[in-house]
Image (cartoon, rainbow, N blue to C red; front, top):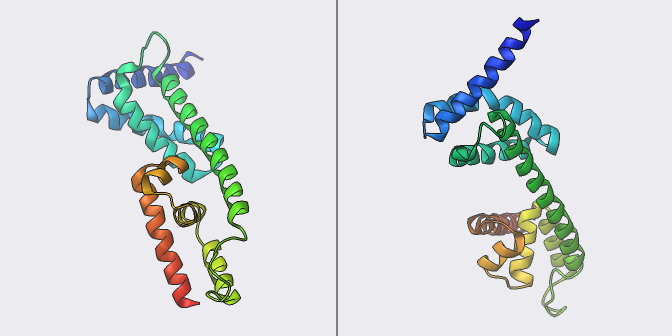
Amino acid sequence: MSAMVQPHIAARLELNDLMTQVAQGDRQSFFALYREASPRLFALAIRLTRRRDRAEEIIQEAFIRIWTRARDWDEERGTAMTWMVSIVRNRAIDVLRKDVRTAAFDSELSREYEFHWITPQPDQVSADDRSELHMCIDRLDNHQKNTVCLAYFEGLSHEQLAERLDAPLGTVKSWLRRGLLRLRQCLDHE
């Protein structure tokens, strides 16, 4: 019986020792900590989000936080694994909340712009052109669609887009650039 408990205790002590070394800036210990803890933390992230891509994002951000905040870990308050689990859990909750806000925003935005993609005079744009534009915009992913619509129908600047979409400025610029490129390609090929 004690032989079965020993490996678990040894693993917990090893993670605690690694975390102590990580707190002192030891990169090799950080890589070892990642190797040992990431499979369990990744499984937790998948269980919480039910999406592999989200879980990968969460683990990446969690380990950046673990590296930069390792000094905040206090062995008296819990094991290294407990501390890392709380980081992953909190990050997953943040991502899920953001997904809910984004889904609500996407739905609201889709309703708002559903029938108002183009507002020029009827003699300037044919019904076929409007239909083609609708079809091409519908092919954009949600981020690109939202960014393009807000930029061109509400005239928001890059900074305003970043604030409204709750995303980094560089990411918003990328969504807009890729969205416009995909629109151009779609319209040229139709």
